[in-house]
Image (cartoon, rainbow, N blue to C red):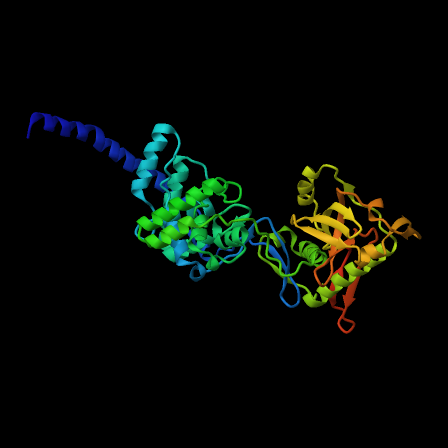
Length: 455
């Protein structure tokens, strides 16, 4: 062997081997010190996710949901295969091969941490992410990473790969208060994850890395780039065909915010049930996934809501028209005013655009133009309000009391025709009780809950 090679070997033995030995000794010492302090991964087998309080009618219609986190836990069998593949392509393509830790990636991340003080390339497997999300913080330090490795190894010993993926899919935060993939599907697309197409699945799979940065609602360009990168990874890994890739790549961004999918909106009932649950259960009511089933019948509630609204509107209209809510003189402001004026008690906001003997032409909240015909009952017998007991004579000339820019309210007939209306000044309440049992079958505390919460 040449002398230079021998010298090189001796240098290696003198420098590298002691360093490696010291590294192993340090790792062993850390293991002995930290291992007893780590939480038990046994808790993952019986984990209960934080889920909101849900209020139902007697016929099991969802009428209210309360809680900080929106989550709908699902089983592994309900997770589409293409979504699993998209997550593996984005986060951990060797998931089913490794033992919970990607040592090559960790080595790369360790070099970055030593040289720059930060970790850019990650190195965390899905199992390590699970350990961090359940047991640790997101602090970037050597001790936290070592704990993460130990926990990941323990998790892989205790539960199966599919169970790990299920926990991961139900735990991760995906933006807009959505925790877990099912909640994300409902939040961004308004449907179950089993009903999403490939492009939508890839979009959601791109969120765990940075839910705000890749949020398709607030950062659509970045979200689209992330989605397309994941699709490319799926093609490279053989998860999808070239045809599937091309089709998904051309799919437009369709994500938009969808609130909780309430079957029937009965806010006065939901609020009463929420208050009772809080009084009995305390703050845990919002996080333990309780379901409260009321005695209210959704069909009777719907009839009660309609009857109360109709009665109040008729009573108010008999006292005369009080004029527009406001007049917006600049037509350039009309669209913005309509966008920021809420629907109240099903009365839609609209702005008068022109007045003629044929009636009123109005711009609606959906930016369509409607005509309230002069023959409509609301205009044919229109009289202005003077006081509680007095009205002016019937209006002969609409231009005397209406002008372009008037913000008015529309009620729609059963035939879908617009009719002039206004927000009632009077309030009312209705409670329907089953006399044989005392059960409340319907309840409404006012014209519109979002106008006034007072019941």
